[in-house]
Length: 93
Image 1 (cartoon, rainbow, N blue to C red):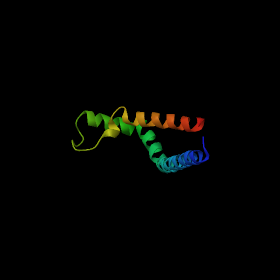
Image 2 (cartoon, one colour; image 1 turned 135 degrees about the vertical axis):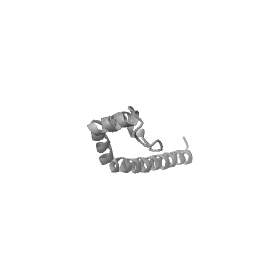
Image 3 (cartoon, helix red, strand yellow; image 1 turned 90 degrees about the horizontal axis):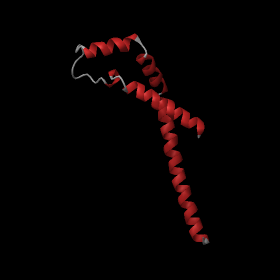
Image 4 (tube, rainbow, N blue to C red; image 1 turned 120 degrees about the vertical axis):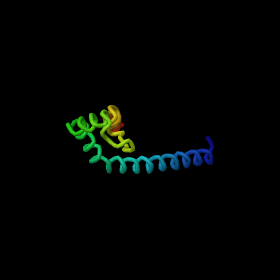
């Protein structure tokens, strides 16, 4: 590889890597900021409150226009599993 080509290629690597590092750093900041929310969701999912809320939803006692993704049987579990896998990945990398 000629000198100018090499320098251009290395400059491209530097730019790409710098952008990726900045995006990852911002994403990690966002992830760290929601750790308390994740902890609260996990506690809610294991609680009698969630079971009660779920049963009331199943029986039609909640307003129809209420956003209720948190009461699906998989949404919180999937999020917690994704967090576990992400944490393992960060430990390996």
